[in-house]
Image (cartoon, rainbow, N blue to C red; front, side, top):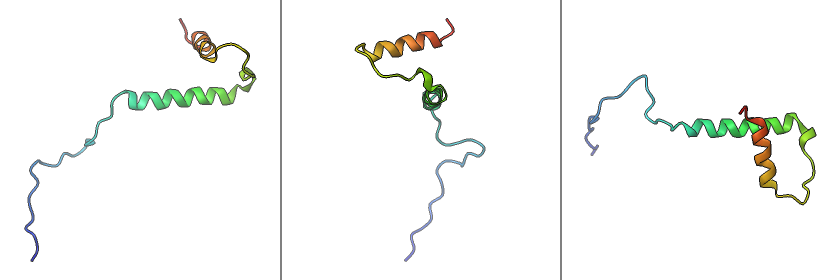
Length: 68
């Protein structure tokens, strides 16, 4: 015996996605891609790590890259 069909409780929305992404879900992958691409395109800046803390080197590179 087949089950009865139930009508949808809410009308179907057209022209809009049902799931909305937060802003960072698009920005973070884009920023990560740009950083990795810049590392690949300019390998002359890649060098062996000295005795310094790598995190501070990354912060110094970010400070040089930012316009202010």
